[in-house]
Amino acid sequence: MRIRDFALKDLPRATKQSAWLDIAPRADGGNWQLPLLTIIGADDGPTLLVLAGVHGDEYEGIAAIPQIYRLTQARELRGRLVMAPVCNMPAYEAAQRSSPIDGLNLARVFPGDIDSTITRRIAGWLCQKLLPHADFLIDLHTGGIAYELPTLIGYVHDDGALGQASLAAAAAFGAPVMWGHPLPLPAGRSISAATSLGIPSLYTEARGGGGCDVDVVACFRDGVLNVMKRLGMIRGDLNRRRLTHHLVGDGNLDTVIHAPVAGFFQREVSLLEHVKAGQRLGAILDAAGAESAQVKADRDGLIIMLRGLPRVQAGDGIAHIAQPRHKKK
Ligand SMILES: [Zn+2]
Image 1 (spheres, rainbow, N blue to C red):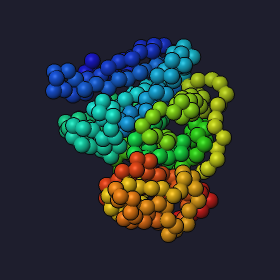
Image 2: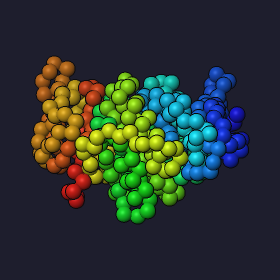
Image 3: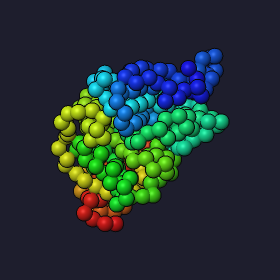
Image 4: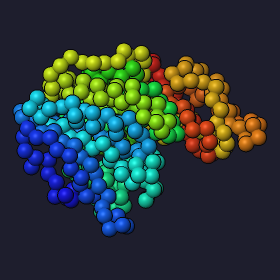
């Protein structure tokens, strides 16, 4: 089916179905498609939209969604569960973060444009056909091949109704780390598009590295089911991981500590380690092992993101530091 012809409201009650929606023509005569798993409950209730594969090299969310689909029965559901396990099919096929076709990062082009190139087109259709019908959004990310982050749930840190709904859902999700981001959120993300529509949202991160960690998959699966319980969509007790860290900060992984030169990044710190401004985090080595540059902390806080892939180009992100919740910047 063409995504142009798809309408969530046309799906019958008490049904589960998987669909492949045509987004754009491919060079081989086929179509770039969006796989969509939907469960329409027997009773009215909220609509939860769950996205994964916005970046093509982040696998735990892609693995969690089919598990959530199998575990959720339409007759036991209030409302609608709408899940897109691989949003960025061109990037997924190429096993890379951004699209090999137009070079764009899907998580920087929301709300997109259905008349533009493939990446903006995907964002545009998600924003036209799915997001406006959602009462809540969860976007499942990890660090991908190049970056490592602790398993965390990111939420909107704000005293307004949207922020409070996001915080309550983050607490229900039950990841080991909570990370709140004050408004305004950086532009172009699915959660910034949701926020501009007044829709509360969450996103995840995890270690990444190009693998698919079963514990992370289980945390994401249980977390989405926990949020469904919190929203009154299904019954049952919450199954949460113990909270170890609650952090706040801008969360903009585009404004991180960058590699000053190309080379081999050798780390000297670990994820969630406390560091002081000016502290050495590691070094960039040349191919003979000589040190080309130091990498230092730009502020006090905890290491929330760290480069996992050692080979870096000048300007690549190396590390990001977040603050514990009780400290105001
Ligand atoms: Zn991502």
